[in-house]
Image (cartoon, rainbow, N blue to C red; front, top):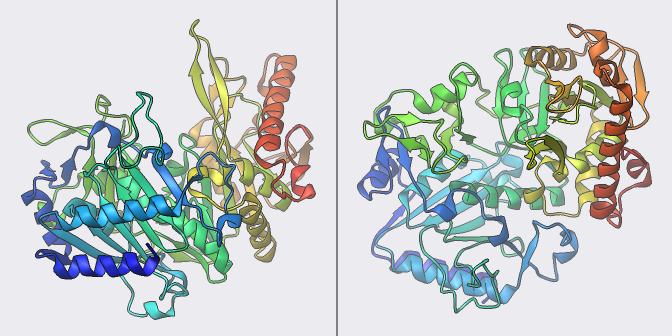
Length: 550
């Protein structure tokens, strides 16, 4: 079945179906979600929903990219997250999605865009049988601007078919979809066809499946138009300067980007074009576990403010709610990945346009539990491209004896599952943008000092805030730097508000030999991962030689 067949069949489904709600307003979607028993109204007016166990998070092993001759050379098929699907299987999937949607009692169609810069905004049409899925797109994607015809994607919009609670016929997909540990064929699939601009979410009720499918599409199509997609948060200072913060979970990205002195553009996905920085999103999809009003007051107030339910529309997903409608955000019995979807407008300190100028400062955040990286270092363009490729942080894993050792974790571009193109493309684009706009990148370690986890202590958040402030205000530009030859980074001799001895991690270790051993071990982890992931990926030699340990 060709693209035109799919779109013609969709048009027929929407024409023949007796109950299609075309772009219902927000209050209508909220009411429909309640009437259909898709969600309950909480005590503060937000909606609460609970998904099946297999839908409490993304399902990366069930997420596919259609492999076609016209585009397969653009995609890194060696990346574990780029799982190919044959065009024939995708045709079956799209056909089944259309059939199942046609037999549902009602359909919801939303037309939104992804991207706050009209020049490169992607029109997205979502068709689903679930009002809550439609409301999710209203929260997360942006209204269609009046001048959408200006977009390079105006005639190349994306269509998403979402059947969150339907399940595939296992026998029909035998040999086409993955085998589960129990030997059965999976009955869910999240698939995207970049060439036909069509996606299907079948059997996954996790809101993130919709969000991340669309953003993966953006991360694929934007480089083709000379635009660098970035998995990052962005904010703007009172003087109009823009900063980007990139970092994996646990590095402090959300906390540090929510600066009361700076207006937030967005917290997850942005594009860097000739016009500057533009947020993809209309909303946020925040983790809820252990959320605290004193640590994250903006998020807390956004989701837990009291309002009539028709005026609220924040969606709590898989959070513990008591019979009186109140939430216990510390309870992880359902999942540690409870989430809330809400519009950016629910936050106080935001820039409504979600756009800004070219960034002068970029922060790469890492939580190094080895305790060997300095709290701040400056990166040359080549070094920045290397650390961008690596996307390093640490995770903690317990051993049988109770000793906890850091595990080096690498996620290319700080968002590996959602960056499908060949890695040299994103890295080259970052280097070009840095040089064109005189952008400085700093590596900020929010992890351990004085020793590894279990010996040293977590970096004081107040010191980290001083470092971030110094970087964003240009106070680190004229300071003298010393090269760390193991990690190929430039370490400042001083930083306002930070004791000088803290800037050089070896000084904080009582056992200097132990520091050297741990540093060499981390550098060897970098080398091993680089050689495995990028050894034959056309990475420029000047970038490759910046890999720690080389």
